[in-house]
Image (cartoon, rainbow, N blue to C red; front, side, top):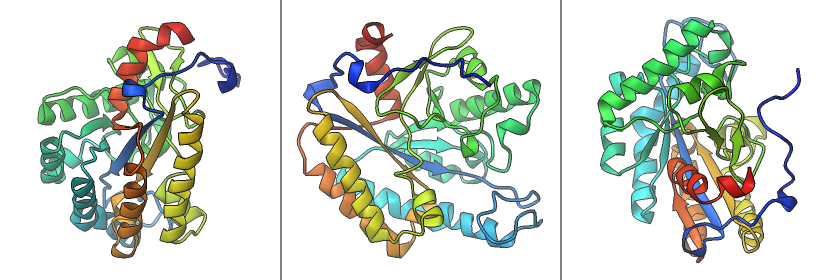
Length: 291
Protein backbone atom coordinates (compact mmCIF):
# COMPACT_ATOMS: atom_id res chain seq x y z
CA UNK A 1 0.00 0.00 0.00
CA UNK A 2 1.47 3.36 -1.03
CA UNK A 3 1.78 6.14 1.53
CA UNK A 4 -0.60 8.94 0.55
CA UNK A 5 -0.42 10.92 3.80
CA UNK A 6 2.79 12.91 3.44
CA UNK A 7 5.67 13.56 1.05
CA UNK A 8 9.28 12.67 1.67
CA UNK A 9 11.10 15.67 3.16
CA UNK A 10 14.78 15.30 4.13
CA UNK A 11 15.41 17.33 7.26
CA UNK A 12 18.64 18.81 5.86
CA UNK A 13 16.72 20.50 3.01
CA UNK A 14 14.06 22.29 5.06
CA UNK A 15 13.89 25.96 6.01
CA UNK A 16 15.39 26.79 9.40
CA UNK A 17 12.96 26.16 12.24
CA UNK A 18 12.93 28.70 15.09
CA UNK A 19 11.28 28.09 18.46
CA UNK A 20 10.15 30.80 20.93
CA UNK A 21 12.91 32.76 22.69
CA UNK A 22 15.52 31.18 20.41
CA UNK A 23 15.11 27.79 22.02
CA UNK A 24 17.09 25.07 20.30
CA UNK A 25 14.87 22.27 21.44
CA UNK A 26 11.19 21.82 22.29
CA UNK A 27 10.76 19.04 24.86
CA UNK A 28 7.41 17.52 25.64
CA UNK A 29 6.71 14.72 28.11
CA UNK A 30 3.80 12.44 27.30
CA UNK A 31 2.32 10.41 30.14
CA UNK A 32 0.08 7.59 28.94
CA UNK A 33 -2.71 7.30 31.51
CA UNK A 34 -4.79 4.33 30.50
CA UNK A 35 -7.73 2.18 31.52
CA UNK A 36 -8.08 -1.54 30.89
CA UNK A 37 -11.17 -3.70 31.21
CA UNK A 38 -10.97 -6.81 33.35
CA UNK A 39 -13.48 -8.68 31.17
CA UNK A 40 -11.40 -8.36 27.99
CA UNK A 41 -7.93 -9.66 27.19
CA UNK A 42 -5.41 -7.06 28.24
CA UNK A 43 -2.69 -5.66 26.05
CA UNK A 44 -0.63 -8.59 27.23
CA UNK A 45 3.00 -7.86 27.88
CA UNK A 46 3.80 -11.27 29.36
CA UNK A 47 3.23 -14.13 29.68
CA UNK A 48 -0.46 -15.02 29.23
CA UNK A 49 -1.96 -13.58 26.01
CA UNK A 50 -5.71 -14.04 25.63
CA UNK A 51 -6.43 -15.01 29.24
CA UNK A 52 -9.68 -13.59 30.70
CA UNK A 53 -9.52 -12.28 33.31
CA UNK A 54 -5.83 -11.50 32.81
CA UNK A 55 -5.00 -10.72 36.43
CA UNK A 56 -1.26 -10.64 35.82
CA UNK A 57 -1.31 -7.90 33.17
CA UNK A 58 -4.34 -6.03 34.56
CA UNK A 59 -2.85 -5.70 38.03
CA UNK A 60 0.57 -4.80 36.66
CA UNK A 61 -0.97 -1.96 34.68
CA UNK A 62 -3.21 -0.93 37.58
CA UNK A 63 -0.14 0.00 39.62
CA UNK A 64 0.05 3.11 37.45
CA UNK A 65 -3.14 4.92 38.48
CA UNK A 66 -2.94 3.68 42.07
CA UNK A 67 0.69 4.54 42.80
CA UNK A 68 2.96 5.34 39.86
CA UNK A 69 1.28 8.48 38.54
CA UNK A 70 1.55 10.17 41.93
CA UNK A 71 5.32 9.67 42.00
CA UNK A 72 5.58 11.17 38.53
CA UNK A 73 3.52 14.17 39.61
CA UNK A 74 5.84 14.77 42.56
CA UNK A 75 8.91 14.69 40.30
CA UNK A 76 7.43 17.06 37.72
CA UNK A 77 6.18 19.39 40.46
CA UNK A 78 9.66 19.62 41.96
CA UNK A 79 11.15 20.49 38.58
CA UNK A 80 8.35 22.82 37.48
CA UNK A 81 7.56 20.82 34.33
CA UNK A 82 4.11 20.49 32.77
CA UNK A 83 3.15 17.24 31.07
CA UNK A 84 0.94 16.23 28.20
CA UNK A 85 -1.36 13.32 29.03
CA UNK A 86 -2.47 10.74 26.48
CA UNK A 87 -5.72 9.89 28.23
CA UNK A 88 -8.12 7.01 27.80
CA UNK A 89 -11.42 8.78 28.39
CA UNK A 90 -12.59 5.94 30.68
CA UNK A 91 -10.05 7.27 33.19
CA UNK A 92 -12.40 10.26 33.60
CA UNK A 93 -15.02 7.81 34.86
CA UNK A 94 -12.96 5.35 36.87
CA UNK A 95 -10.06 7.51 38.14
CA UNK A 96 -11.35 11.11 37.99
CA UNK A 97 -9.00 12.32 40.73
CA UNK A 98 -6.06 11.83 38.34
CA UNK A 99 -7.71 14.00 35.71
CA UNK A 100 -8.56 16.64 38.32
CA UNK A 101 -4.95 16.78 39.51
CA UNK A 102 -3.68 17.08 35.94
CA UNK A 103 -6.05 19.97 35.27
CA UNK A 104 -4.84 21.73 38.44
CA UNK A 105 -1.31 21.52 37.07
CA UNK A 106 -2.39 22.89 33.67
CA UNK A 107 -1.32 19.69 31.96
CA UNK A 108 -2.46 19.17 28.40
CA UNK A 109 -4.88 16.30 27.73
CA UNK A 110 -4.72 14.41 24.43
CA UNK A 111 -7.30 11.98 23.13
CA UNK A 112 -6.09 8.39 23.53
CA UNK A 113 -9.23 6.43 22.79
CA UNK A 114 -11.81 5.26 25.30
CA UNK A 115 -9.88 2.31 26.73
CA UNK A 116 -6.66 0.55 25.81
CA UNK A 117 -8.66 -2.67 25.72
CA UNK A 118 -9.93 -1.47 22.33
CA UNK A 119 -7.70 -0.58 19.37
CA UNK A 120 -8.94 1.43 16.40
CA UNK A 121 -7.70 -0.95 13.72
CA UNK A 122 -10.33 -3.57 14.64
CA UNK A 123 -13.27 -1.16 14.26
CA UNK A 124 -15.65 -0.35 11.44
CA UNK A 125 -15.77 3.25 10.21
CA UNK A 126 -18.90 3.94 12.25
CA UNK A 127 -17.38 2.40 15.38
CA UNK A 128 -14.10 4.25 14.93
CA UNK A 129 -15.79 7.62 14.51
CA UNK A 130 -17.98 6.94 17.55
CA UNK A 131 -14.93 5.98 19.63
CA UNK A 132 -13.01 9.13 18.68
CA UNK A 133 -16.04 11.29 19.40
CA UNK A 134 -16.72 9.62 22.75
CA UNK A 135 -13.11 10.14 23.81
CA UNK A 136 -13.21 13.79 22.75
CA UNK A 137 -16.57 14.63 24.34
CA UNK A 138 -15.81 12.88 27.63
CA UNK A 139 -12.53 14.75 28.01
CA UNK A 140 -14.25 18.03 27.11
CA UNK A 141 -17.03 17.43 29.67
CA UNK A 142 -14.48 16.98 32.46
CA UNK A 143 -11.75 19.46 31.51
CA UNK A 144 -13.78 22.14 29.74
CA UNK A 145 -11.33 22.03 26.82
CA UNK A 146 -11.45 20.07 23.58
CA UNK A 147 -8.36 17.91 23.17
CA UNK A 148 -6.12 19.25 20.41
CA UNK A 149 -3.96 16.16 19.98
CA UNK A 150 -4.44 12.45 19.44
CA UNK A 151 -2.31 9.40 20.24
CA UNK A 152 -3.98 6.16 19.23
CA UNK A 153 -4.04 3.25 21.70
CA UNK A 154 -0.95 1.22 20.75
CA UNK A 155 -0.50 3.87 18.00
CA UNK A 156 -3.03 1.91 15.94
CA UNK A 157 -4.87 3.50 13.02
CA UNK A 158 -7.07 2.56 10.10
CA UNK A 159 -6.85 4.12 6.63
CA UNK A 160 -9.61 6.51 7.79
CA UNK A 161 -8.22 7.66 11.13
CA UNK A 162 -6.42 10.83 10.05
CA UNK A 163 -9.40 12.04 8.02
CA UNK A 164 -11.76 11.45 10.95
CA UNK A 165 -9.45 13.25 13.38
CA UNK A 166 -9.23 16.29 11.12
CA UNK A 167 -13.01 16.34 10.60
CA UNK A 168 -13.58 16.15 14.35
CA UNK A 169 -11.36 19.16 14.99
CA UNK A 170 -8.12 17.63 16.21
CA UNK A 171 -5.08 19.76 15.38
CA UNK A 172 -2.30 17.20 15.59
CA UNK A 173 -1.56 13.49 15.78
CA UNK A 174 1.54 11.77 17.18
CA UNK A 175 1.17 8.17 15.99
CA UNK A 176 3.82 8.61 13.28
CA UNK A 177 7.22 8.43 14.97
CA UNK A 178 9.31 9.31 11.93
CA UNK A 179 10.71 12.82 12.44
CA UNK A 180 12.34 15.31 14.80
CA UNK A 181 10.20 18.20 13.55
CA UNK A 182 6.46 18.65 12.98
CA UNK A 183 5.08 18.24 9.48
CA UNK A 184 1.75 18.43 7.70
CA UNK A 185 -0.44 15.38 7.04
CA UNK A 186 -2.62 15.10 3.95
CA UNK A 187 -6.28 14.79 4.94
CA UNK A 188 -9.52 15.01 3.00
CA UNK A 189 -10.83 18.05 4.89
CA UNK A 190 -9.15 20.60 7.12
CA UNK A 191 -5.59 20.41 8.43
CA UNK A 192 -3.72 17.96 10.62
CA UNK A 193 -0.14 18.19 11.85
CA UNK A 194 2.17 15.37 12.91
CA UNK A 195 4.04 16.20 16.13
CA UNK A 196 7.03 13.97 16.97
CA UNK A 197 6.45 11.18 19.49
CA UNK A 198 8.97 8.45 20.26
CA UNK A 199 8.94 4.68 20.38
CA UNK A 200 12.65 4.73 21.19
CA UNK A 201 12.80 7.18 24.11
CA UNK A 202 9.82 5.44 25.68
CA UNK A 203 9.73 3.27 28.77
CA UNK A 204 7.77 0.34 27.28
CA UNK A 205 10.26 -0.56 24.51
CA UNK A 206 13.22 0.36 26.72
CA UNK A 207 12.34 -1.78 29.70
CA UNK A 208 10.17 -4.50 28.20
CA UNK A 209 11.58 -4.73 24.68
CA UNK A 210 15.28 -3.94 25.09
CA UNK A 211 15.53 -5.10 28.72
CA UNK A 212 17.43 -1.99 29.77
CA UNK A 213 18.06 -0.94 33.35
CA UNK A 214 16.73 2.37 34.71
CA UNK A 215 20.23 3.87 34.68
CA UNK A 216 20.56 3.00 30.99
CA UNK A 217 17.22 4.70 30.31
CA UNK A 218 18.53 7.80 32.07
CA UNK A 219 21.60 7.77 29.84
CA UNK A 220 19.47 7.23 26.73
CA UNK A 221 17.38 10.30 27.56
CA UNK A 222 20.48 12.42 28.17
CA UNK A 223 22.21 11.18 25.00
CA UNK A 224 19.08 11.89 22.94
CA UNK A 225 18.96 15.36 24.42
CA UNK A 226 22.64 16.07 23.76
CA UNK A 227 22.45 15.29 20.04
CA UNK A 228 19.15 17.09 19.45
CA UNK A 229 20.35 20.08 21.49
CA UNK A 230 23.46 20.36 19.32
CA UNK A 231 21.48 19.96 16.08
CA UNK A 232 18.99 22.52 17.37
CA UNK A 233 21.67 25.19 17.28
CA UNK A 234 21.21 25.17 13.50
CA UNK A 235 17.47 24.42 13.24
CA UNK A 236 14.97 23.67 15.98
CA UNK A 237 14.18 20.11 16.99
CA UNK A 238 11.50 18.33 19.05
CA UNK A 239 12.27 15.77 21.75
CA UNK A 240 9.45 13.55 22.98
CA UNK A 241 9.60 11.39 26.09
CA UNK A 242 6.88 8.74 26.33
CA UNK A 243 6.12 7.41 29.82
CA UNK A 244 3.74 4.89 31.40
CA UNK A 245 3.12 5.23 35.15
CA UNK A 246 3.07 1.48 35.81
CA UNK A 247 6.68 1.28 34.57
CA UNK A 248 8.54 4.53 35.21
CA UNK A 249 6.50 5.04 38.39
CA UNK A 250 8.12 2.03 40.07
CA UNK A 251 10.31 2.99 43.05
CA UNK A 252 13.53 1.63 41.56
CA UNK A 253 13.04 3.58 38.29
CA UNK A 254 11.63 6.97 39.21
CA UNK A 255 14.83 8.52 40.54
CA UNK A 256 16.55 7.96 37.20
CA UNK A 257 13.80 9.84 35.41
CA UNK A 258 14.28 12.76 37.79
CA UNK A 259 18.04 12.77 37.19
CA UNK A 260 17.53 12.88 33.43
CA UNK A 261 14.99 15.70 33.62
CA UNK A 262 17.22 17.67 35.97
CA UNK A 263 20.10 17.32 33.50
CA UNK A 264 17.99 18.79 30.70
CA UNK A 265 16.69 21.57 32.93
CA UNK A 266 20.25 22.73 33.58
CA UNK A 267 20.67 23.78 29.93
CA UNK A 268 19.67 27.12 28.45
CA UNK A 269 17.58 27.66 25.31
CA UNK A 270 15.32 24.69 26.01
CA UNK A 271 11.53 24.96 25.73
CA UNK A 272 9.69 22.56 28.05
CA UNK A 273 6.22 22.62 26.57
CA UNK A 274 3.22 20.58 25.44
CA UNK A 275 2.22 19.00 22.15
CA UNK A 276 -0.56 21.55 21.65
CA UNK A 277 1.84 24.47 22.12
CA UNK A 278 4.32 22.94 19.66
CA UNK A 279 1.56 22.42 17.09
CA UNK A 280 0.17 25.93 17.55
CA UNK A 281 3.52 27.67 17.27
CA UNK A 282 4.60 25.65 14.25
CA UNK A 283 1.30 26.20 12.46
CA UNK A 284 1.33 29.96 13.07
CA UNK A 285 5.00 30.56 12.30
CA UNK A 286 6.37 27.86 10.00
CA UNK A 287 3.72 25.83 8.23
CA UNK A 288 3.42 28.07 5.16
CA UNK A 289 7.19 28.33 4.69
CA UNK A 290 7.71 24.58 4.88
CA UNK A 291 4.67 23.15 3.06
